[in-house]
Length: 354
Ligand code: NAD
Ligand code: DAU
Image 1 (tube, rainbow, N blue to C red):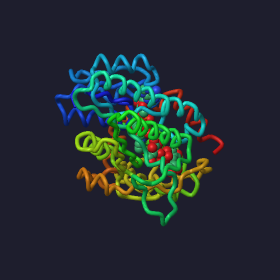
Image 2: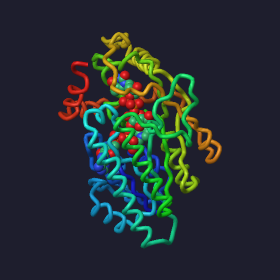
Image 3: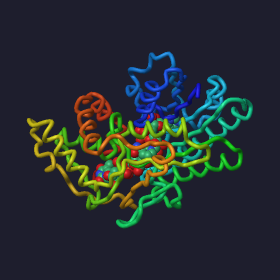
Image 4: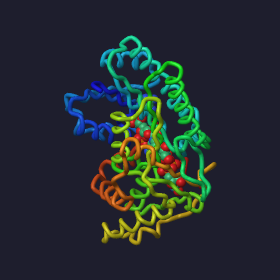
């Protein structure tokens, strides 16, 4: 691995991964291709932009000419593909954008990799595709956790588009022997997550005394992994993972949404004892459920643990405390996003009349 292309590196997990990989591999040339959509933020990489090994290209993964040129000019040998439309609620409002970026964009990257690596067959190559546990659908309370052989059963336009992209990646391995790996990860949380997702939205709203809109009964279950643990898992797959394989990644926990929300509000009560909004749990409001809302996700992580020795280091308690503290200490980062017109329009569309 000498020259890596990271797509979506200005987003939440992508920017955490760039921080991680630059700290762990000083010899690597890192090219970040990101269209800087509403979810992308160059400020996430402020302290890296002058690093001579880091190179940022503002552009779209669906732009075939640009993507081809990037492979040739940088002699890319490794791809970690994060770029995607990622918010389930937005996929319900605007599914076609998800189809375009998540499926067609992945196809463009696969084609560019195939072309460049066929012409330059020497050396090791890898296309690592970042996917989600949502492709497996929803679990009943007593079902076993998802694993790498669980049949796909996506329920939202977002998860269906991610499922389609997984299939496409897999097909390039079988048809063209493109050296791919895939990881299906559970819900991430931590620094730099865009405040449309549950944890950063609720921290930000609670700090400002705004309602905390719980969808349905709040008893849905997710498996939460701290973003740095996810980054380490990806790095292990790049270093030791077997080509053609899929790896499940998760945090080994299954709280209900309400349990997560109450943990956040009690951390805020403790860290901000002078807050006029204390107790922050009084801000909870039950609202109309998300259409097609998946009830439960959980991931069996024994394969990546057994084969690559990876296990999550952060507990949910310690990770949530770090996350709440990060959002309090980086209030300007959140405020800049909260001022964004597009984001306010989305909040209005998604939450008014709910
Ligand atoms: P995010 O929404 O925070 O960031 C997405 C990034 O992709 C942004 O920087 C955006 O500008 C960029 N992007 C979007 N469309 C693009 C395009 N056409 N061309 C170039 N760049 C484009 O996303 P995230 O939460 O960091 O998720 C990253 C990846 O991880 C996604 O593939 C997602 O499906 C997957 N994933 C996320 C989670 C999670 O909990 N957040 C869990 C499992 C898997
Ligand atoms: O499971 C991995 C997936 O996790 C990723 O692939 C997605 O990109 C990521 O967005 C996330 O999807 P979720 O739909 O699980 O995440 P979200 O933060 O949107 O919601 C988490 C739970 O909280 C879900 O049950 C819906 C609920 N929720 C969310 C919001 C934004 C609420 O009750 N109220 C809200 O306002």
